[in-house]
Image (tube, rainbow, N blue to C red; front, side, top):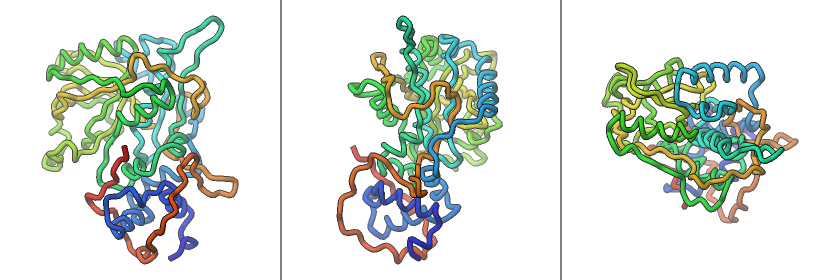
Length: 374
């Protein structure tokens, strides 16, 4: 099999892996690396579908007027059920719904981009006749241009799935605001009391400050018909033995908390969270469930108080944009050839021939993962 025999989507995936130098980011032998990379070329495999999120022809797509109207209406209808939200502080602030393409693994980018928008709205103000604008970010274009190959590999080709929320948020803070920020602002729930935690989180949300966090991707979280999650984590498993004992071996999903409600009879305090799913862009999760997951020291993160956004930042979209579909950040030139912008020039070095592996129905090797460069 030769390059010319590959389908267009396979060619685009292979070119992305070459340009992003993904063959250099694995702690593996040459043969194992070849198997991992070529596994992404097998149509309908999970790795192929994940990689497709980075090689489709278009960047972020602004949802149609009808789609946006329905999405925002459903979003605002659910948000109104909560007494404490970031929208109560800024009644004129419109939601910014950044959605994921199917099989996309960019939840941390979407949650962080929405967080920056809401926080930049808090920074924005009228200065005489001038209205300071807010950040509405094109996530797809940013990933296409700026994200290195090792990070893309970690969310597409490996058996290790992590949200990397703090790392992503810090990167975006530097790209879209003051560059002297050394870290994100984090705070923990150090007390296993739902009531104390509720009072603590309420302070932030009443000031209009949203915060991101990572939740365990337990069975049932993918059921988009469920709008409220509460109770013990065991209730979401048919067989609790299927849940990895080591928290580091579990998959996580990034969410953005935009509101909270107090305990109501038997219902625990509930967090109102914005998600990046077009079917369910918002839902609620109980503090009792988070505590039962063992997240007594659950880490929430947001921007520091002294962070100031850059109103002239690149990768912005129209201020009127309210709903954006992300997860297809690869663009093409006028000849239909995929290309990536702002990548480092690849090192010229001899590469071993991997063509002998092309006939194999390969899959990624369990346990092999891409390491993150500091």
